[in-house]
Length: 152
Image 1 (cartoon, helix red, strand yellow):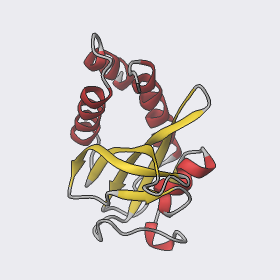
Image 2 (cartoon, rainbow, N blue to C red):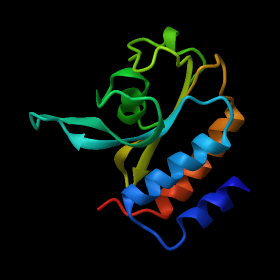
Image 3 (cartoon, rainbow, N blue to C red):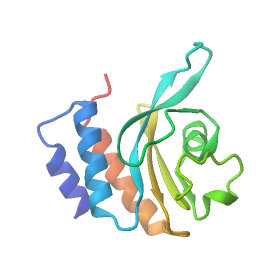
């Protein structure tokens, strides 16, 4: 049902900023016990020697602006090209504490045509907030977002 709602929200619009803003707001408003939901988009590093994640549209408190690939939960999801479900972020090696109130996190990489375009990140103040069922559902929602959005 949520996937159909996302498809309906994005219908007729393919712009990245518009769709990412709408998607973030929908997730933040629909899923309980969140304190952040949003995008980090892949960009070249400022020195041009690699890639990093730059904060994009989101809902919640002020966030870290840039995250290197491989650093923290978001950077790990991007580098490893897989969803990271972390029950306790304080136990995650290299965790980046953008908001000290965050205790659990799930990050889904945005992969289209084999390219990591960024990640969708969700934080919760509740330990163990996200389940395998949440993972599957959120991956389905992100797939609908990717199908309905242009990244150029």
